[in-house]
Image (cartoon, rainbow, N blue to C red; front, side):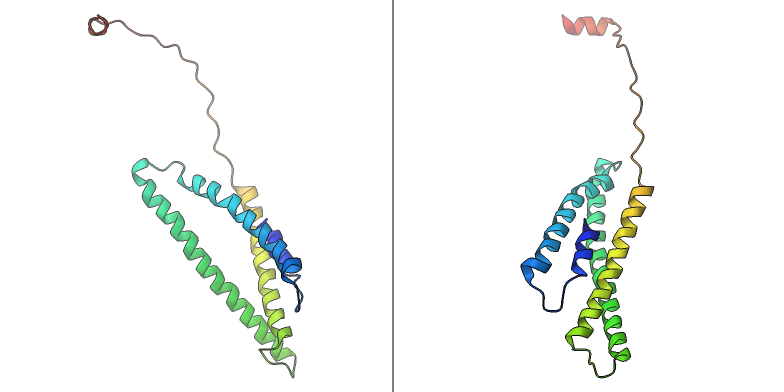
Length: 153
């Protein structure tokens, strides 16, 4: 859902309309993130001892925050480099021209969409659910001991 949302954002025209061009991509991206945060948190905390659950949860949330900050920095660098390359290759334009900025942001969104698709493919091919153990049929036998009989009396 995030990849489709970002792909929709790559199609924004220079003089676009918020509700026509941005809003559908924002709703789709927000829905995708809201549907993924809880399952990712549950998956990352499965198999963690109760005593370590607080530390594990803190690591998950910290990595989410740091990943977002690094991602924004990287995509901003790509956008700035692409804008600069556009200005260099098109004499007469300056970095503040709407066309140059649009080109830089569009390039950054293409890179982001490609990374999201690659992540989805990796997740679909590499992440497998844990095998379910076959149920063991057991017959409960209670040995009667004098201690148990005394408690019952």
